[in-house]
Length: 514
Image 1 (cartoon, rainbow, N blue to C red):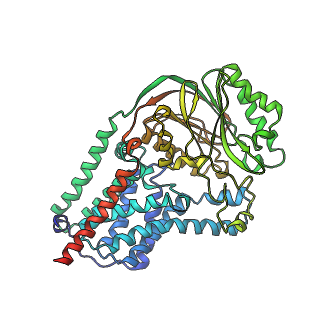
Image 2 (cartoon, helix red, strand yellow):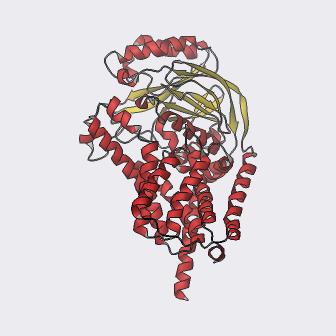
């Protein structure tokens, strides 16, 4: 195999296992800095290159898995430990139990990089094939699995680090998982180049790096979609209601005092948006005066979207969005379909765990798999609620009916559960990648942040400060047309992952036959 012939790494002393584990934790923590709010995508390549280098010299499956697990503990411990805030500060879970649950959660997520490195070590391949095919494919495959198993948790999937920079050009073509794969190929190339026996042998992986970066920059210049309709005036409201008071006694009055004055300050034009569960009561329980204040917006001439719980039957609650049009048409509705485990539905066998938290309306119903976009203010608006915009394949389902293809996306969120932690800028970065995948602008209306407008190229064009109250006014241009990702979804990325893993397996089988 040509790559192996020219890329044999230098023989070096084996690093002791404790040192490997400590290095894995440090590399994982560095990897977390690749994402918002730091946004250092190049650091991802270096961190992954360091991890991959640990298994190029002596790929023992057990040691490789432990290194991957250590990397995952550093990565998720630094990146998503803000879940502790929701459990202890707002869920009122005892601190020790919340800390243990946070550690277990990070350990569970760390199993995925452990699986990736174990798989790569099990496949018989030389260092060149391992670095450029096996490790990247196993890494991207484990990231895809993390997004689907047990309802999925793709937060901080590696591709999200590339909303800016040269790899952003691949996002409209291959989506987040394809971008993860290419980022891992870059990391594998760096690892291979640094371990080459001769300087000339480093030219092959260096050429891969240059080619991938150059192609990504070229793709960034392509405009995949085109303008649709007139520019739309939007007003996004952020009330900054403290999460610990929202569902307490007096929470309804507090929400009214935060949002109704803002509502009266809006201009009677375009689209006005209130965030997820803007009031702590279901729609049918709202006071008459509050209903009248909401209805006054479309009556004055602006379309309105607001997040609210809807009760159907006896204690069947839906986390929903209602759209009202100035033309008097029937209200339009979207209900959240991808619910958060423990926060919005209770997995089997974990009732005891949820009962130790103060989680209002913590057992909800799912909306239908396909719900048509809202036709408001001359645009077709595909709504998703909070955590749902982590799932690009599900967002893509809004294009099922070409006649109703969305012209923009709208995310309603309430991240008050996480204070001003990294969860807020990380969620904003996720929405930016959805804009790149779909070639559509994304509107974000949140209770505490990040309330923002993102253009079709994934750039934030307007944003309110975190943990403040205010109205974000902006003009947004809807878009039509298809990106390659909208047309093909994750299929090309998954096919590449399978092919990259199958090639060395087939080669090993042929060599055994010979």
